[in-house]
Structure formats: C-alpha cells, structure tokens
Image (tube, rainbow, N blue to C red; front, side, top):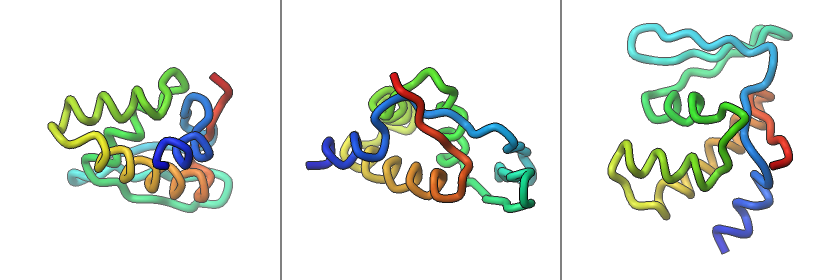
Length: 99
C-alpha cells in the first residue's frame, strides 16, 4: 500500500524548483521562495532530503541513501520522506519530473 501512495506522490525524479534559494544558518537550512518571500526551515534530515532532490533521483533512491546515512528502517524513512515531499510540493519548493 505504501508503494502505491509513493507512486502517486512521486512517479518520476524529484528536483528543487527554480526560484528557490537554500541557505544554511545556525544548524538549519532555510529555503526561500523568491516569487513571494515564503520560507521553510529544514532540520538535518530535511536538508539531506533537499540535497538528494537533484533531478536525478527517484523516491526509492532517496530513501535508500537516507537509510544508509542515518541507519534507519526503510518503512519509517519512506513514510517520513513521502510526507515531507508532499509538504515541499504544496509549498512549491519541489517538483517531480518524468523519469
């Protein structure tokens, strides 16, 4: 079931939207949407997901990289990443391109 919802969220590769600046400050990464000044603060894991959304990786590849980096169970990581990706897409910070 999680795979079906993952496909609905991310059928291709994830990429950062144009017009979004990322800046690290005091242990957090802050994303700034230039068109309207909206911003979004990321913790360490969120920043890692953001960096992996480079237009080359699928959800599965991002989850695998995070599992290796943070030594966490794949099911937990997948669920958290899907929720986070939905948030970033809703905020117009992240896009999905066809694979």
